[in-house]
Image 1 (spheres, each protein chain N blue to C red):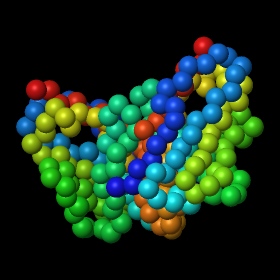
Image 2 (image 1 turned 120 degrees about the vertical axis):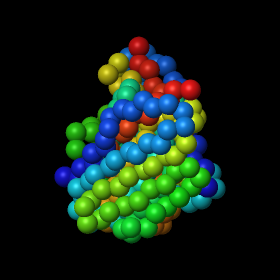
Image 3 (image 1 turned 90 degrees about the vertical axis):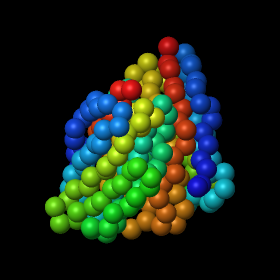
Amino acid sequence: EDKVVQSPLSLVVHEGDTVTLNCSYEVTNFRSLLWYKQEKKAPTFLFMLTSSGIEKKSGRLSSILDKKELFSILNITATQTGDSAVYLCAVEANFGNEKLTFGTGTRLTIIP
Amino acid sequence: GAVVSQHPSRVICKSGTSVKIECRSLDFQATTMFWYRQFPKQSLMLMATSNEGSKATYEQGVEKDKFLINHASLTLSTLTVTSAHPEDSSFYICSASGSYETQYFGPGTRLLVL
Protein backbone atom coordinates (compact mmCIF):
# COMPACT_ATOMS: atom_id res chain seq x y z
CA GLU A 1 0.00 0.00 0.00
CA ASP A 2 1.31 3.43 -0.95
CA LYS A 3 2.21 5.62 1.99
CA VAL A 4 3.09 9.28 2.46
CA VAL A 5 4.31 10.67 5.79
CA GLN A 6 4.72 14.36 6.46
CA SER A 7 6.52 16.04 9.31
CA PRO A 8 6.11 17.97 11.41
CA LEU A 9 2.33 17.74 11.78
CA SER A 10 2.24 21.36 12.85
CA LEU A 11 4.68 24.21 13.00
CA VAL A 12 4.44 27.70 14.47
CA VAL A 13 7.09 30.27 13.56
CA HIS A 14 7.50 34.02 13.50
CA GLU A 15 7.20 36.07 10.39
CA GLY A 16 10.50 36.24 8.57
CA ASP A 17 11.67 32.82 9.68
CA THR A 18 12.59 30.07 7.24
CA VAL A 19 10.79 26.74 7.46
CA THR A 20 11.43 23.30 6.03
CA LEU A 21 8.61 20.82 5.62
CA ASN A 22 9.33 17.15 5.11
CA CYS A 23 7.64 14.44 3.11
CA SER A 24 8.73 10.81 2.91
CA TYR A 25 7.00 8.20 0.83
CA GLU A 26 6.72 4.57 -0.11
CA VAL A 27 5.04 3.96 -3.44
CA THR A 28 5.06 1.31 -6.11
CA ASN A 29 5.97 2.62 -9.56
CA PHE A 30 6.62 6.20 -8.51
CA ARG A 31 5.80 8.81 -11.11
CA SER A 32 5.82 12.16 -9.35
CA LEU A 33 5.56 13.96 -6.02
CA LEU A 34 3.39 17.01 -5.66
CA TRP A 35 3.11 19.76 -3.09
CA TYR A 36 -0.13 21.62 -2.45
CA LYS A 37 -1.13 24.52 -0.24
CA GLN A 38 -4.54 24.31 1.36
CA GLU A 39 -6.08 27.30 3.06
CA LYS A 40 -9.82 27.36 3.52
CA LYS A 41 -10.96 25.23 0.65
CA ALA A 42 -9.43 23.00 -1.97
CA PRO A 43 -5.67 22.57 -2.37
CA THR A 44 -3.78 24.77 -4.76
CA PHE A 45 -0.91 23.32 -6.70
CA LEU A 46 2.64 24.38 -5.82
CA PHE A 47 5.15 21.98 -7.37
CA MET A 48 5.45 18.72 -9.22
CA LEU A 49 8.74 16.87 -8.83
CA THR A 50 9.77 13.93 -10.94
CA SER A 51 13.57 13.97 -10.97
CA SER A 52 16.01 13.77 -8.10
CA GLY A 53 18.21 16.67 -7.20
CA ILE A 54 16.54 19.31 -9.34
CA GLU A 55 15.26 22.18 -7.27
CA LYS A 56 11.96 23.73 -8.24
CA LYS A 57 11.57 27.33 -7.19
CA SER A 58 8.72 29.81 -7.10
CA GLY A 59 9.40 33.04 -5.28
CA ARG A 60 10.14 32.26 -1.67
CA LEU A 61 9.14 28.63 -2.04
CA SER A 62 11.41 25.88 -3.24
CA SER A 63 11.30 22.12 -3.24
CA ILE A 64 13.58 19.23 -4.05
CA LEU A 65 13.17 15.50 -4.40
CA ASP A 66 15.48 12.66 -3.40
CA LYS A 67 14.31 9.48 -5.13
CA LYS A 68 17.03 7.38 -3.57
CA GLU A 69 16.09 8.25 -0.02
CA LEU A 70 12.39 8.61 -0.93
CA PHE A 71 11.73 12.05 0.45
CA SER A 72 11.11 15.63 -0.50
CA ILE A 73 11.40 18.94 1.31
CA LEU A 74 9.51 22.16 0.85
CA ASN A 75 11.34 25.30 1.94
CA ILE A 76 9.73 28.64 2.57
CA THR A 77 12.06 31.57 3.23
CA ALA A 78 11.18 34.94 4.78
CA THR A 79 7.79 33.62 5.80
CA GLN A 80 4.74 35.87 5.78
CA THR A 81 1.38 35.56 7.52
CA GLY A 82 -0.14 34.67 4.16
CA ASP A 83 1.93 31.49 4.17
CA SER A 84 -0.17 30.14 7.03
CA ALA A 85 -1.90 27.08 5.64
CA VAL A 86 -1.83 23.31 5.55
CA TYR A 87 0.81 22.04 3.16
CA LEU A 88 -0.01 18.70 1.60
CA CYS A 89 2.38 16.32 -0.06
CA ALA A 90 1.07 13.70 -2.47
CA VAL A 91 2.62 11.02 -4.64
CA GLU A 92 1.40 9.80 -7.97
CA ALA A 93 2.03 6.27 -9.13
CA ASN A 94 2.39 4.88 -12.64
CA PHE A 95 1.89 7.00 -15.68
CA GLY A 96 -0.94 9.37 -16.29
CA ASN A 97 -4.27 9.71 -14.55
CA GLU A 98 -3.31 7.64 -11.58
CA LYS A 99 -4.51 8.37 -8.11
CA LEU A 100 -2.77 10.63 -5.67
CA THR A 101 -1.94 9.41 -2.21
CA PHE A 102 -1.84 12.29 0.23
CA GLY A 103 0.09 12.74 3.43
CA THR A 104 -1.59 14.06 6.55
CA GLY A 105 -0.31 17.55 5.89
CA THR A 106 1.73 20.04 7.90
CA ARG A 107 -0.21 22.87 9.48
CA LEU A 108 1.98 25.97 9.29
CA THR A 109 1.14 29.03 11.36
CA ILE A 110 3.06 32.25 10.93
CA ILE A 111 2.91 34.65 13.85
CA PRO A 112 3.21 38.35 12.94
CA GLY B 1 -3.97 27.13 -15.21
CA ALA B 2 -6.91 24.84 -15.78
CA VAL B 3 -10.16 25.66 -13.99
CA VAL B 4 -12.42 23.18 -12.28
CA SER B 5 -15.72 24.22 -10.77
CA GLN B 6 -18.00 22.49 -8.29
CA HIS B 7 -21.63 23.08 -7.56
CA PRO B 8 -23.03 23.63 -5.05
CA SER B 9 -20.33 25.05 -2.81
CA ARG B 10 -22.39 24.33 0.28
CA VAL B 11 -25.45 22.18 0.89
CA ILE B 12 -27.52 21.40 3.94
CA CYS B 13 -29.99 18.57 3.74
CA LYS B 14 -32.16 16.37 5.90
CA SER B 15 -31.17 12.84 6.78
CA GLY B 16 -32.45 10.35 4.21
CA THR B 17 -32.37 12.67 1.23
CA SER B 18 -29.99 12.42 -1.73
CA VAL B 19 -27.58 15.13 -2.74
CA LYS B 20 -25.92 15.60 -6.11
CA ILE B 21 -22.62 17.43 -6.49
CA GLU B 22 -21.38 18.50 -9.91
CA CYS B 23 -17.77 18.83 -10.98
CA ARG B 24 -16.94 20.58 -14.24
CA SER B 25 -13.70 21.21 -16.08
CA LEU B 26 -14.24 24.62 -17.62
CA ASP B 27 -11.42 25.00 -20.11
CA PHE B 28 -10.09 21.54 -20.80
CA GLN B 29 -11.31 18.03 -21.42
CA ALA B 30 -10.96 15.87 -18.36
CA THR B 31 -10.48 12.26 -19.30
CA THR B 32 -10.30 11.37 -15.63
CA MET B 33 -11.98 12.86 -12.61
CA PHE B 34 -11.33 12.04 -9.00
CA TRP B 35 -13.53 12.47 -5.95
CA TYR B 36 -12.04 13.08 -2.53
CA ARG B 37 -13.46 13.47 0.91
CA GLN B 38 -11.93 15.48 3.69
CA PHE B 39 -12.88 15.46 7.35
CA PRO B 40 -11.98 18.45 9.56
CA LYS B 41 -8.25 18.79 10.08
CA GLN B 42 -7.55 15.64 8.12
CA SER B 43 -6.01 14.99 4.75
CA LEU B 44 -7.77 14.22 1.50
CA MET B 45 -8.99 10.67 1.10
CA LEU B 46 -9.60 9.42 -2.40
CA MET B 47 -13.07 7.98 -2.79
CA ALA B 48 -13.15 7.00 -6.45
CA THR B 49 -11.66 7.54 -9.88
CA SER B 50 -13.86 7.94 -12.92
CA ASN B 51 -13.00 7.87 -16.59
CA GLU B 52 -15.36 9.38 -19.10
CA GLY B 53 -17.86 6.88 -20.37
CA SER B 54 -16.95 4.06 -18.01
CA LYS B 55 -17.79 2.96 -14.49
CA ALA B 56 -15.99 4.55 -11.59
CA THR B 57 -13.33 2.68 -9.66
CA TYR B 58 -13.97 2.93 -5.95
CA GLU B 59 -11.37 2.81 -3.21
CA GLN B 60 -11.56 0.13 -0.58
CA GLY B 61 -14.16 0.89 2.03
CA VAL B 62 -16.18 3.31 -0.12
CA GLU B 63 -19.73 2.11 -0.77
CA LYS B 64 -20.46 2.39 -4.47
CA ASP B 65 -24.21 2.18 -3.91
CA LYS B 66 -24.00 5.03 -1.44
CA PHE B 67 -21.78 7.33 -3.47
CA LEU B 68 -22.93 7.19 -7.08
CA ILE B 69 -20.50 8.64 -9.57
CA ASN B 70 -21.33 9.46 -13.15
CA HIS B 71 -18.82 10.79 -15.69
CA ALA B 72 -20.99 11.21 -18.74
CA SER B 73 -18.90 13.73 -20.62
CA LEU B 74 -15.34 15.00 -20.81
CA THR B 75 -16.26 18.09 -18.81
CA LEU B 76 -18.73 16.84 -16.21
CA SER B 77 -18.75 14.33 -13.39
CA THR B 78 -21.36 14.05 -10.67
CA LEU B 79 -21.27 12.54 -7.21
CA THR B 80 -24.60 11.64 -5.67
CA VAL B 81 -24.71 10.89 -1.97
CA THR B 82 -27.77 8.68 -1.64
CA SER B 83 -29.86 8.55 1.53
CA ALA B 84 -27.45 10.87 3.26
CA HIS B 85 -26.89 10.57 6.99
CA PRO B 86 -25.11 12.89 9.45
CA GLU B 87 -21.92 10.82 9.23
CA ASP B 88 -21.77 11.71 5.53
CA SER B 89 -21.28 15.35 6.48
CA SER B 90 -17.91 16.29 5.09
CA PHE B 91 -16.03 18.35 2.56
CA TYR B 92 -16.11 16.77 -0.89
CA ILE B 93 -13.52 17.82 -3.45
CA CYS B 94 -13.24 16.77 -7.06
CA SER B 95 -10.23 17.01 -9.29
CA ALA B 96 -9.82 16.60 -13.02
CA SER B 97 -6.98 15.77 -15.31
CA GLY B 98 -6.44 15.48 -19.03
CA SER B 99 -4.07 13.01 -20.58
CA TYR B 100 -0.83 12.73 -18.60
CA GLU B 101 -1.46 15.94 -16.74
CA THR B 102 -1.54 16.88 -13.13
CA GLN B 103 -4.83 17.00 -11.29
CA TYR B 104 -6.62 20.31 -10.94
CA PHE B 105 -8.88 20.64 -7.96
CA GLY B 106 -12.34 22.10 -7.70
CA PRO B 107 -13.16 24.47 -4.83
CA GLY B 108 -14.98 21.77 -2.87
CA THR B 109 -18.52 21.25 -1.59
CA ARG B 110 -19.34 21.31 2.08
CA LEU B 111 -22.15 18.91 2.90
CA LEU B 112 -24.01 19.08 6.18
CA VAL B 113 -26.63 16.43 6.85
CA LEU B 114 -29.02 17.20 9.68
